[in-house]
Amino acid sequence: MEPVEINAGLWYLRALRCDDRVDDRPAVVASSGDPEILRWRHRPPADPADAEAYIRRRSGEWLRDERYSWAVCEPTTGEMLGEVEIADLDLCHGTAEVACLALPAARGRGMITTALSAVIRFAHGGLGLHRLTYAWADGNTASARVAQRCGFRVEGRMRGACWWTGTGSTCTSPAGWRRIVDGPPHSVLTSTGQVIPPRPAPC
Image (tube, rainbow, N blue to C red; front, side, top):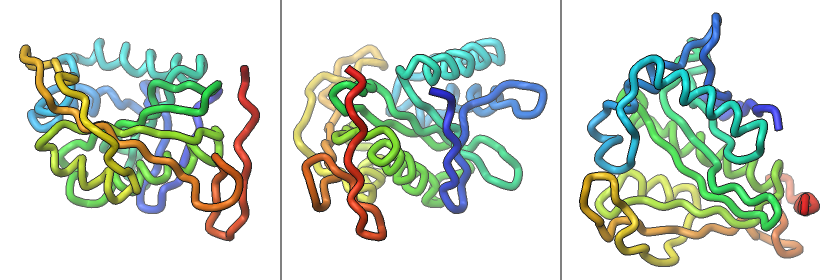
């Protein structure tokens, strides 16, 4: 599908860009060198050329329905302050995993919770997904708080799932989340109480 823009109140979500009007390369480069991000997730070092390739790859993933990713932006300037994505996307079975990151300037402002909540609503209402997972490393209390605020429930632990610092670690606590509030299984309940059934599976 073509990239979808989302207005998330104080924040604006759009596809990552690198063109004559918007350039997200500096933000991608900054995220690849941020100690706090690298502490919890694998993100290879990037220069502007690497960042451009990353952005092009994300654009292609949208068109191939492999992964949907958004730059989380300050709406007045369009500056990219974080990234949220729907990955491991299986439209046939209605499942995916969500992930996110925030650059230092946006931390502690509720940006990721707001942006991820908006993407979750899109995943259920727009894509018809019925199950999303969110994983965080043991000790990453900020990520755990985001998961809790977005309604995820811990289902278990994947031991040895993190392997980006040279040492296998029992660090990832996956959380499963089903937005089944009322009505038929795998439905979405809107704020007005309307039940929206999932879209037919494409396979």
